[in-house]
Amino acid sequence: MLYALLFLSILFTSAQATIPLRLVTEIQLPARTVTWDVQHVEDSTSFGWAALTEGETVWGVDSTYEEYLIAVAVDTIWYQTRSNENVQQYLFSREEYNAWDLNFRWSGLALLSLPGHTGLCAVAHAYTELDRRHDLYYFDLQGDTVAMRQTLFSEGWDATHYYFNGIDVWPALPNTAEWLVVAGIRSNQEEYHYNCHVTRYRAIGTAFPVLAEVGTQLWYSSFQFYRRSPLLAMAYISEYRVRSTPICELPDVNSYAIGYGERDGNFESTNVDTFELPGRVVAQEDFDGTKRIFYSNGNCYNAATGAIEFTNLAIADTTLSAYVRNAPGEDFLVLQNSRFLVYDGRTGVLVDSTTEIQGVPQKKFVSSGFDELLTYDAAQKLVRIYQPFETLLSIQATENGNVRLSWTTSPGATSYRLDRSDDAEFNNFFPDYFAPTITSIEFQPTTTIEFFRVTPIFE
Image (cartoon, rainbow, N blue to C red; front, side):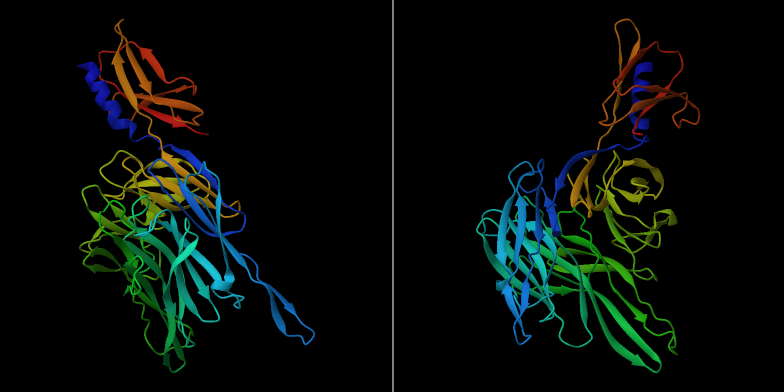
């Protein structure tokens, strides 16, 4: 009976220890990378990537001081279907897109599998300043062709501007894509009053079936998918207005809301009024299907009803949500001092912190186990992928009547701390430290019930 109680207490308390994140792999992108994407291209155990680098258009001046085009830029998509294979290149001349535009820019790249196409494809966003137009280009990387060009926005020559935020695909590789979502912000200076000029900003997004000429335009932005849901879903930001002069007889008006939408024939949403200026939106979903939206004001909203589930100002700058420990759902992760503070997604209570990471968090991959977290070092053009590594305790009786405690190895740990207590909450405990080469101990059991927990030390 004593052994059973010991075993159950170990499983309960080990989840409260520091959550170790191990570096799964590093991906070195080309030096001139301007936009990139990493996916599970072929299966859930390997990583593939693509990076787009811009070429350089060369101009000259003739004897009459007229500019003329000497060489058209050649842009390149570098890619690997697996990170341990040879890097391949897809080269394409800028002449096919807009050779005369000095301010032609690529931003946003997503790997995907297109319906009816064999092999890996990519979709990239391009902006041509001369035409003031935002386009998507679909590249068939295996066939070396442009499958399609799709115009997103045409700005015209009024005061309207579009700011591109990002692309996401559902479902992700290695599945064939069905929907593409592109998000950004539209601003237009359209309200004029005495001594007052008001600029209107409206989040704008487009969701459409891939390879469809005409999409459904939505007022969504700063989206994040609920990857555990079988449907396409996102958190989004709506509209706000900013006054450009301090002298204004009108009262302050700032309309700003977040919401949630799913693809079920049509997009439907539940608006949540934050009464705040623009901030970060993080979407979170438990395994039981409960969806939440966390916002920079510290509130956590129920995505279906808009009700505030809890408020915690300590997590107002939430970076993302992820499944990083054995719990019923995802947690909110806040990056501080190169490590994540972990808050329970259901209650907002601080759980613990993770080990240190390098780079800026970008996104997560959802798997059947713990989620994989991607970071990016822009200076080194280096993508790092981290995954939680759980340190499990087990207990068994030996032939001589002793008890053996064993724990799984945490890669990179410099030591292990084993806490021993007479209460499950560890209000009072006695720590012992062990070298990283030691992963089990044997001792003689006492007549009292004891609780144990192990914590890997990484610094």
